[in-house]
Length: 247
Image 1 (cartoon, helix red, strand yellow):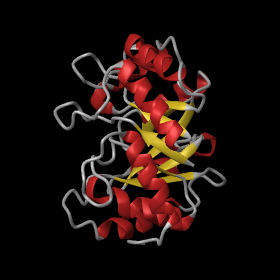
Image 2 (cartoon, one colour):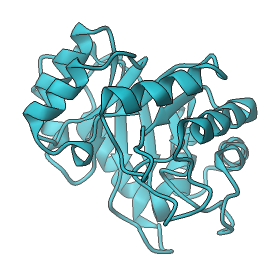
Image 3 (cartoon, one colour):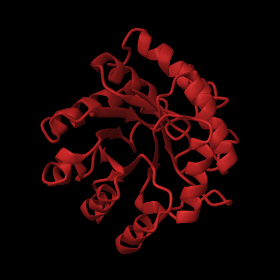
């Protein structure tokens, strides 16, 4: 499964290609799905480009995207959008339009309570396990681990420069740490910035789900700026069908 991550916490200051408004998100999702994306991950944003868990903001993004695609659509619940765990939980409980799934970063405070609230509302859980955090251990001990939709093995915060050599090794270490944590649950492996393409190729070589989009990288494999998410999806399909470089 190839997921498109449309925008992440990036803003127009990072790139004019980053979609912000519901209309822009819908257009980006439609183009990415036409290019081969099978699932959509989005960060709903306020008009000024800040990630938001507001029911109004989430509903607008989901309704716009669902009007033009027929694949699952998921959202973030990242603590940067609402740092206070109780307020974040209240936000999720007040959503009027529900995503198909939502990512929960297990190293963030209140992850279990947040995941339980989402499950109660019928929303699938993408368990975000960031390399270099306590997330893997916390997730392994969680009674909710067997109930997640999938595990996101995320090589985030490393390889921000041009030398991405350590990223696949970090990814392999993370996968080993997660072994047995959620038996039978699919794993989506991805990297970020300089590590995005090496980790995507590793995921392809290992037969794992993966993702790409302007959240994870603004650049194509050859270093050129991507015009949009659809171009990244097409490049990902080509990269995964070729030699597993960086694996």
